[in-house]
Length: 448
Image 1 (cartoon, rainbow, N blue to C red):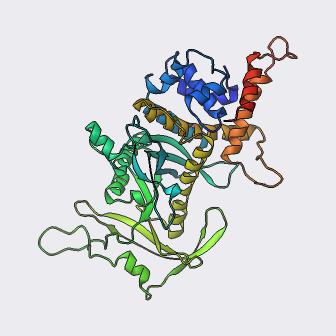
Image 2 (image 1 turned 180 degrees about the vertical axis):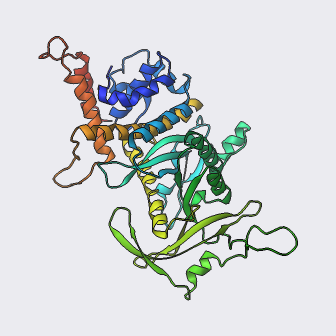
Image 3 (image 1 turned 90 degrees about the vertical axis):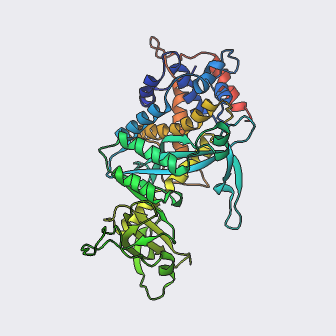
């Protein structure tokens, strides 16, 4: 079996407390195999890359996902603590949340549904695919070898489709319901920290914003143009009856965007780490209201990019003290969540899972996304001790490290630890099992 170098094992070892002494070695081998695997990241592919294709006790590796007792929630907390301990060097703390689709089909996939597939859609036509909907929370932080911030997943939950819940006789929970549960859970772990939650327009709801405010979190999100906005309640109220909790309704954002009499102010912002760009904006502070709920104070910013002739877009934050420039730049950090999903598909076999058991389905994909974060932590620690260079070619040059560079370097460390490890008593002699030769040859020769 392959093993991890000591400087990499330090990152993985804290998770051993979640597993029994019998299960932990199998779990560690699955993680090592997932790092070394290319293309598909099934348990069978992992066993092949580990040189265990002839092992008759292969079922014990499958049982890690579908039967053995361990808590994914406890693993999420350990991973979040590890991320904050190794990477949190700035304040405030940023967390991104978003959902994504894992394309899966088959009669034995219990939680599947028909969802909008954004990666296959175009502006002229929406595409839909059968699969599983995952909701992921990610720790957004800077890394010393990259200009952009990285979004590192630490909690991923499955949101079953409405039809599957009805079939199972369970109450259906929407994405907002799952998000609320995740916010409340993470707040218990980070009760003493100030957090900005970055989300897209699907999470723009008064109830969800109020939940964030009760947790002392600030929601930064996109806002609809037809949102119901009101003025603040008057400070002095002398009429009989209950004092109103809001003032008069304001002009809708859509009408403001089309009103030629309203002046737009120029604003220069950092545009996705691609330099600065000047856009037009208008902003304000008001109350956001929905029937049956208490209004919440927000700071909104409406932007318009005249260079690209795009329609107006609106962003808001429950932190009313943010400046328009800061609010927009905070929201732009959310794009790193999409980068993480795409890199997980390309390099960690997201969308290639083949588990059928319900428990295995709920565990496999979150484990892969957690591996993304652990690789980033490992790369951050190694970059401080060793010089990691990008994988450049004569026709493609990049100046900073990417996730593929970190994954390649960690793979090299594992293979070098296995093949170039010297004997303790005879430093000049190699100490490795002869089956390693055959395993490496099989990996180089395998077509897929």
